[in-house]
Amino acid sequence: METGLSGKTALVTGGSRGIGRAVCVALACEGVRVAVNYVSDSKAADETLRLVVAAGGTARAYRADVGDEAAVRAMVAQIEADLGPVDLLVANAGTSVPEEPLAFSLDNWRRMFRVNADGVFIPVAAVGPGMVGRGYGRIVCIASIAALRPRPRLAAYSAAKAAVIAFARSCSESFAPHVRINCVAPGLIETELAATVDRDALIRATPAGRIGRPEEIADAVVYLLSDRSSYTTGQTLVVSGGRVNLP
Image (cartoon, rainbow, N blue to C red; front, side, top):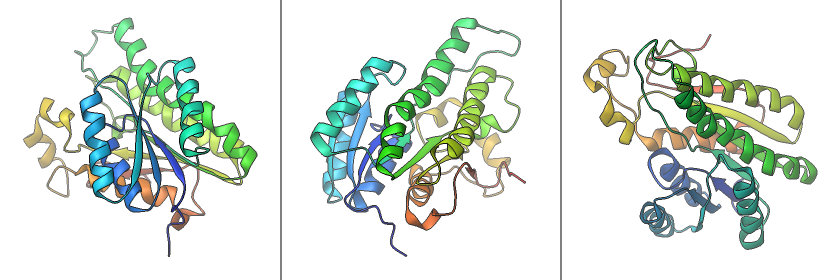
């Protein structure tokens, strides 16, 4: 079955590195025009553009802080002028800052929600109504298994990612029937974050016996954006090597 994505326009937030970069390349391979969002690392964004072109795709980079509503709406307006209406959104931008249990920092809480929750809400709010009006749209929000299991050193991050799942679940009914929204909840993936954790312990706790690759998350994202998942909305797909399972 074809994905039905060729000729569409996608916005990938946090597209300059890691999972976001892998998603951009995977979408390019499906014939999608890709808008690569980044907040500060223009060299990384340029590298993503190079990889997209090498894959035979078309992409442009757009700088915007996903926690800034005015900046995001301006970015979306520019993307639509350059590439056409946004058909596909991958709300991937995120950050994680561990802190000791019981060291509750309101500043850290607000930062985690600004990037991880506001950074999903604002792009979805910017493109969702247009998708509904046009009668077509696909959205994937990148959550985390931290939203589904206790993480004592990541309480604020976990809460923000849980908010993403609840938000997508609610939007799935608001956007139906022609716009679908789902989440992917990755486990530990080979990104910069993996260098900050006890890899050996996490690998031992993972039935698959290894850390995941960004491309494996990208494959899940492409599936949820594509016609192959045409009867799926409001769901969270866990891609964690078996470390976390939903009923």
